[in-house]
Image (tube, rainbow, N blue to C red; front, side, top):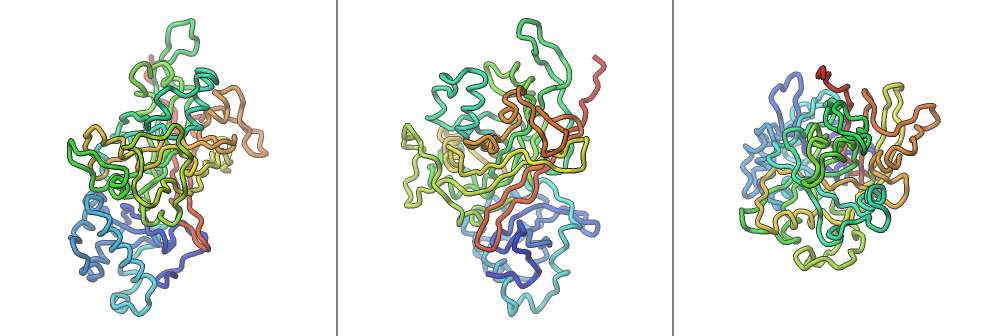
Length: 426
């Protein structure tokens, strides 16, 4: 399959096999538009809809492409999403396509360098899981010792907490270092001030599609078709604030100051060729967390990278190389568990995976792990710069992609800069 509508480089994140969704504006299109990325261009879906490209898709009201968020489109179903995807691929690849004869590229597409990206959806609720065994084990060893690294429930259920949707921001949005209580000396009272142990967390997150009714759980198999797509996510974490506040109810101000997501939502159909078996679950998961379909592959082979641009430099330095396939609890298991008590999920709800770490040090998905709680400074490349945690005016960049034969399915960038804390004069 080859796109003939616009040029697409073999190493482009946005190949014909991808076609991710996002919300964009330009100087000439100041109102937010639904877009699909292809190579170095963004297709305007409302403009394409006006050509009649999607007129034969049953159940699709193309007014969803006039919305300033993707929620309405997310609320449909995988059959419709798949039909739209197929229509786009046919249009982009077939030079003799009827619609192609009616238009020029400029009529329905804009160069990606001219767009400003916005939050892809209005997030009603945000949940963050803790689904990487390696990350959970590393953190447990640090704070509880090797013999008690994993809590007794961890291998039986996907642990999660309810996060703050209002402070989830799109890539490129700067965030302030949070103020809060911390207790650097366990023998002294807590102190108040800016966090001194600010960290990134390499995560992915999925947007919920149609969701479910209150009181009606989703099976693992049903959950698969209720996920619209996936983004990169940096779950910024103030480790010192979190350590003091989290008992007994979990993370609060150490997390809620900001979470960054990438702007392009990669659909599950685009990820389908990259399915892999997830790590073996021992003990065997309870029946409601098991898949009954023929395809038992719950994992995805997605290469993930983190780089940092320290304030002292204009260069990015590598920090983490990981992969979503290391994750113990799958995306569909997370969603099924979330709904098993009857909790209703809605279109546009966001669920984070938790930090994605592997077995090797280079795959550790946070500075907490890379510096082993600040004990081992992280040397940045061949420079004289080192870090234990993120400093003011540092920029952290997450990237990710699936590698096909001669093409990529990528996620673009998830980037954020940490600004100094607000001086409260206290």
